[in-house]
Length: 164
Image (cartoon, rainbow, N blue to C red):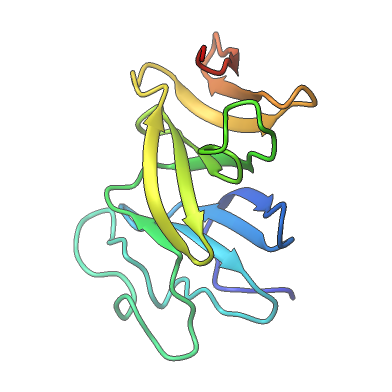
């Protein structure tokens, strides 16, 4: 067992510089998480969570417990995270290189996350019209980001860099 205490991982991505594994997990009614997954660590589910029971009220023992990892970031309300990818190309400029992109099924946006080591410094909502659930995101061999939407008439979208 590499790690345990995960609820429902939806996206996994290796950091391009460090090789560290990141995951995005669905939490219960709030408390979706972004975790840096490390060998032998316990990520707390179902003992600790930032979510609550679907009928309302506390779930587990709270949000912290000795020997259990805290998420790098959590979302309340839940965004229903999906696929994720790190951007390694220069196609979108220096501000985006190294950022983590996470899809949101619930709100239908692509979340651009600026990381600094173990901290999320900023989040930016892309494609935020909320009309289509974002199922997955990948960097293509051309260095551009491709987003897969989740619907009966789902689409594959290519994100074009802004003109200089």
